[in-house]
Length: 286
Ligand code: C2E
Ligand code: MG
Ligand code: MG
Ligand code: MG
Figure 1 (cartoon, protein in one colour):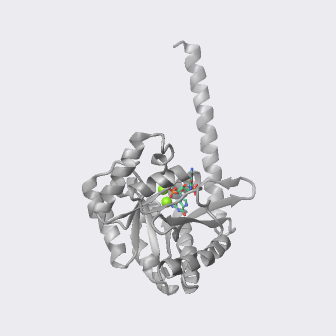
Figure 2: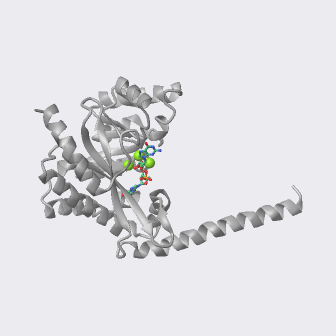
Figure 3: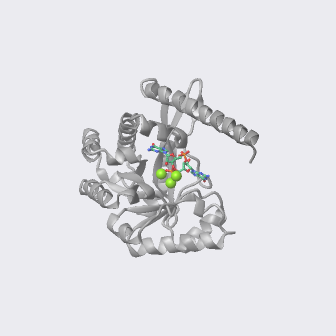
């Protein structure tokens, strides 16, 4: 490599780094005001049972709309919120909002409904977590059986022994834990058994090319049968078409989530959706 090239590379690299760090600084300061300025909302994406064809729950998904920066993906801003500590108050706001909403839905008769909330690594390791959630549930007089916390496989596996202690303390309170993005982390099957999660969410990347990717299909089949043997339910994420749905049904996967059935919806739309589903659910479980 010539000296000239070396210098060009160097300049290009710093320019890119500079752009990235100025975006980070921008997000960092905007995030510090986002809560008080009511810039966050939660959307709810339905999770549908493959056996019964009815709704079994929702996943709550955070959205941030900034007046100048526009809408920013959680994949981009959650890491910034984790590094500046804002994830703690934001996470608490998410839990309070979801539990309040869930209470309303349960009171409307949806007594089998479960809503999952994504937990960041920082929240999961916060010692106050279990107590805080128990308090929020109590304040809202909500049965903990309706709440599911999603923890990614990578976060769970980072310090598996301490994850087991935290998961157990949540389970003691009747709160369920689901392992998110399953299949993308470095997982140990021995730990999977000890986590004793309520469900596994099979990462969308394994579903994407079904039915044209026999290797990923074999992996999905193996995950489903392993989970079944451990008494854990499976939810496939990112289901976008009927071919994928049919394959998942054949493998014995418990439930699906994805654009094929529905995109994430507002709380108001979810309430309307639930009113229709409840009629079906009451027939199925009559
Ligand atoms: P995740 O928990 O794995 O969430 C699933 C993602 O897949 C969501 O992206 C959802 O909108 C998207 N999705 C749903 N159906 C389909 C589909 O059919 N096809 C495709 N391609 N995608 C689909 P979203 O909402 O952008 O969230 C991205 C990630 O950000 C989440 O991944 C989660 O890790 C994080 N996140 C979202 N909301 C929260 C939150 O409230 N708290 C925390 N800590 N993290 C969150
Ligand atoms: Mg999730
Ligand atoms: Mg996921
Ligand atoms: Mg994900």
